Image (cartoon, rainbow, N blue to C red):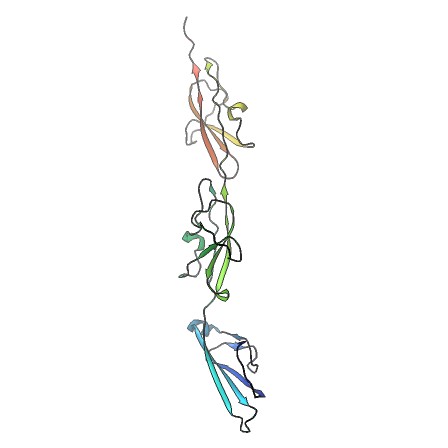
Length: 239
């Protein structure tokens, strides 16, 4: 109540009262702090009155003034970090699941910085990992800002060089290092008979039948790359 003023009053001639259930830091001070009570917040408003007793009036003339204060509870903002994705996928921070459990009826806004001064231009299509911020509410006293973490993992780079043709009964080893030369280092490789990598290739070091097989690379970030490798085994001609 920093704007309240009282002049020409007796030393103990100030008193604040409330229509609600809140409390004053000092009801005898000119500029006390008023803390709303549960009932005030439930109603959404409260009227407070200042009564002042004049020093110049022998009878102690009383003057009164009052003001109605509208109250808005601070909004509740609950954040659930979105699931990790693999590039080129993106993350939608505007999805309802990200702010589930928050105060309803308030449209969130999205920001790059914790002070909410730099807007995030693409909250529905975030392609870069990082910490962003979500705000609900408007005025400084009635808003909430919380961080949200986005993880966009990169796909592993998997380069395939098809092995040279072999003649039966020779076999082909698609586990040789040159097959995947040029790929990212440190990849975990596995070998498959199908493009969905659901049927393992048991004999990838000694393939005796020509065809298309598949190598899957995992870089440990929950992202994988699957590429085909073509094996050619020529049949010996009969003289």
